Length: 319
Image 1: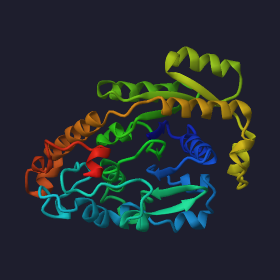
Image 2 (image 1 turned 180 degrees about the horizontal axis):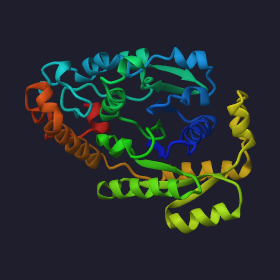
Image 3 (image 1 turned 60 degrees about the horizontal axis):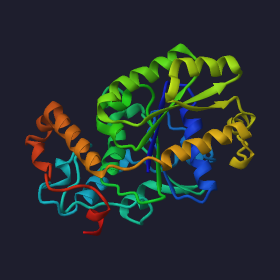
């Protein structure tokens, strides 16, 4: 299953995604985690030091490698330079499993806290005025377009805040999208904006409350979000200790909060994957990006990269 965490900046999105990742890992589940937030804090939230996090290899810095490897011998893609972040796989493309060994994972991912972690990279001074953060997130999007995750495998992405995910088709790459929502009108507004944008694309959007302190907060979230609210996380001493640098076992999280993580995992496990729709939406947003900017940059019609007879699924991997 592919899972995204989104929400208003400061809502606790990274904290909740790290808790969910730790919850899965403690249950012995294989987890591939990707930090795609402009504020790269997931590694530290999972137990890395600041120095380790800063030294982590990045997907954004390895985009040429990622393109060249995934291109394989797909005859529709003459060179890696012709690929953009939305390029869909086709016959001849290299498809990857989340826990295999390959040049991309060797270069970009490292083990941490029982999971395999990759980061898109910081937005630094060299990027100011000449690039947008989506140039880094694009590496993760391209990887997801070629990633075949199997039964009982979890791919978890900590996304950019707010509605930034809608700058490409990345928001359609997930089976479940958890929107972290504080008990405030601003945070609820972000949920409604996200839900409105995602409505026509079959996005499975689930709200999870965070920073809940009392029954008034619960009543507010319930009134505002209705059936979309799966559960909530209360103010946590466990989380506060982690923010001070003391990483405790996830089993020591407050029982109320552990119950919410369990409900989230149940929601994920009950969600089916529609591989045909996954491929169709990937193609749709590739064509949109091609028309909007890709064709002009590449000097060719990138619609030719679409293999109309190909569907990304485990059968394609076997082939």
